Image (tube, rainbow, N blue to C red; front, side, top):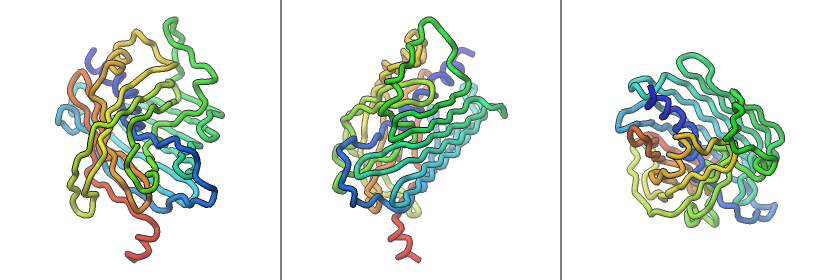
Length: 286
C-alpha cells in the first residue's frame, strides 16, 4: 500500500529529526576543571499517530561525571494499516566538556514483523566518524547525492543530540541553531527556531513545570535522493516541533514531547513519565 510505504519511509528521517531537534549548544568548552553532571534521566514515551497509540519506548540516560550513555528500547504495534509490529534498540555514548556534547559511539538495531530491518554501528572521535557500518547499504542510484568525507566530520548521532546542556543553569538558547546530523545513511541539517514555552503537569513524581518549545526544519545534505516523495515532504514540512524539559539538578534539558506532521496524520511522541535526578539527590533520598 502506497500510504504505508510512504509513512515508513517518512518516519525514519522524521524520527531522527525529532530525536535531534534538541541539539546541545556548540559554545566553547568550559575550563577543564568544570565537572560534568552525575545522575540519570528515566523517561517513558507514548507514540501516537492521529491520536491513536501505535507504540511506546523507554529512554534511560546516565551521566557519570565524565560522559553519558543513552539507551532507548521501543516497540510499535500494527493497530493501523499504516504501521507494522516492530522493535527498536538504540544506544549512544560520549563525553561532555562544559556545554559541549562529544559523541563517541552509536548503535541502532530495528526489526519489523520479526525480521531484522536495519542496523547501524558508528565509532566517532568527538563527532568525527572513524568507522560506520549501516545495513542495508544505500542502493546505487543516479540521483543520489553522494556522501563525501566532509559529510562525516563534526556531526551528531540522533541520540547524542537529545542532551542539551544548560549554559549557566539557563534554558535560554535551547533553540535558534542549525544542527549537523549523520544517521549512518544520510547527512542532514536541522534548523531550529524558538516558538515559545508551554506548561506540563506530570503525575506521580514526573516532571511538572515549564518546557521550551522549538520548531524545526529538515534540510537534506547528502546520501538522500532529492526526487523521493518522503524527502520532498520532509523538506516542506513545517509541523516539526520539540518540547525541552529542564533537569536542573543535572544542568541539562531532554525532549519531553515531539511532533511530526505526516501525510496520514500528526505523529506525536510525548512523555508519560519523566524523572531526572543527580547522584547527590539520590544519596539524600536514601
